[in-house]
Length: 205
Image (cartoon, rainbow, N blue to C red):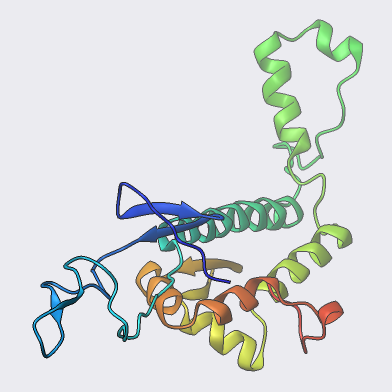
């Protein structure tokens, strides 16, 4: 079903799709006349044998790149906190003893700043070698560094891992991601949204 669309601007929205018309088509620049000179088609009206018209749809790369950048920043913040929580060893006093919770009697002889400083030291390392946090870190790392073709594709679109001081974080090459969005937008989408539940061989990010 064809529908005539009339707009006062060459830029408009149709069902959520932003349309930007960059040229004219299917119109005669001058009157079209028959062999006797009679006007068949007046200037500015549709010709009977129109040329093919093509449309190209492109993704809003800026919004997608912004979203991926935020994901990378959030991921790096999360894994850094998780790794630090189970890697930091408990602190020891100068005499080699551990920091124990303060009693009310202890606090009575201390200022508020002294209490705060002591409790900060006492909390350090409280989750040292915690198995749940260690498993969480491993799961997060595996999610962003899959093997095989999935890992290769992520690297090709600019999403790579970096390993330094025992910590695996993400790096984003925005130029590579933008290029992939122009050339393979559906594949980029699948890299994030595909799932085994929907028939894919593996889950996306």
